[in-house]
Length: 269
Image (cartoon, rainbow, N blue to C red; front, top):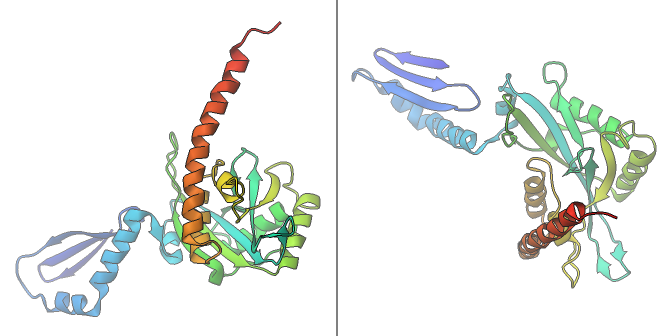
């Protein structure tokens, strides 16, 4: 909590990451010249903008690092362009890597870091070496966004997620895929395997619609969708169609799960 005082005017600002912004203004009508200058300088607009970002969970890298009481995790989306075609006729266009985690959820490579002992990028690079089996240097320039992870029932600690996107040459992506399956110490343990995101949609709505209907960890699905749009890897129309198709596939999957459950309840001979 930080308090700015000028004569009898007191502005109280909250500096904690969950509620940054102006909380209280107490005035008895003395000298407002300093406040007018503050308004004209644009600082108030910055505080208001910052408050809105906090409310939505979106933070800058520096703001997120101020959350010293939160745990921090960094993840990265690695991608490249490609001229490859599926079945020799469906353009793949881009290679986007994700991974199947130990808990059966899809996510991006990365993990927990210790900002008090290392930079975010150093911690992420260390995690990538463990999970991918090859050194993939990540820089501040690759940082996209930081935000609080969705709240989990029974958890009292807050987790700050830092998301990065790094473009590589296709040869580098191939090297990562090979190393992840052969030399990575986490392969078969914390990471069950790397997967490519199919960015195409077949006539039967295969590809991206099916992929998006899978289960993702935290906000990984939103991170993927946002990155595909921001980097123009998939058009908004294609992505909208894929997401709507994914919703229908969820309904179909629910019916399949009920049928599978009935099999376990049927008497066996």
